[in-house]
Image (tube, rainbow, N blue to C red):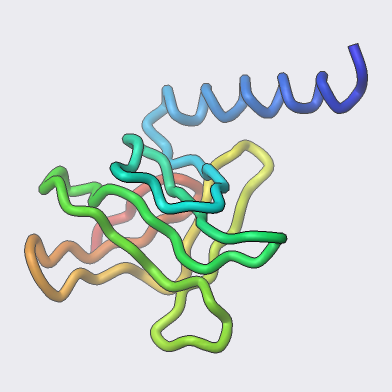
Length: 113
């Protein structure tokens, strides 16, 4: 087994553990998914440039949240990917329509405001 395969296997194991603990984990893709996977933040972009993040609303309303990650845009959010596969977003997410949820996503865990 090569070192890179071992790293990928360990990362997969740690990410699986984070999901099992109910944490949000990162999935990097070039296209937006038709439907976000549970407890997964899909970071969409290409060639190391992230455009937006997509994930299901944690309140359970069934809505999809889509946030800009473009540095020049406004509003915009900053995504941090942690060693254990969990993610953080800054600033908080406050839905103005629908369920009106307001929360922070820190190290994969939802902190309600």
